[in-house]
Amino acid sequence: MGSGCVSCGGGGGGPFSEGRELVDFVARAHGGAIKDQPIPEGGLKTKCRGCGEPFTLKTFVGKCPKCGGVHAVSPPRCTDAANIQYAGKDYKLPE
Ligand SMILES: [Zn+2]
Image 1 (spheres, helix red, strand yellow):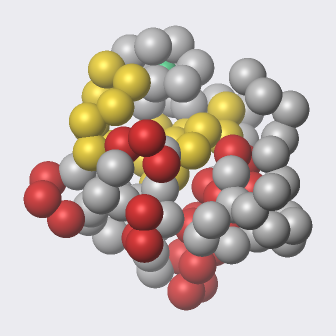
Image 2 (tube, helix red, strand yellow):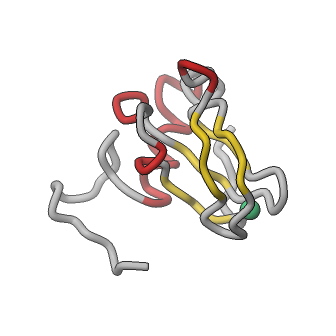
């Protein structure tokens, strides 16, 4: 785990932020309309960043089926599972 690269510009949230900030951004984007949208082509195969369980992220914000850890990817970056960000299982999705 790195200590937070901010070289891509600053923080404050956006489609290219990382970690919990990105998850939070996607969860709130368009009033929450994005987070439940299906990812094109059936989703992204990934592994839980928390417990290592393999699963498919099918919507832009999704939870690990095993530990409940919240993962998200922003729409402009959803073609590559490497861009999935992890917020942790204590993250509470905004309503
Ligand atoms: Zn997990």
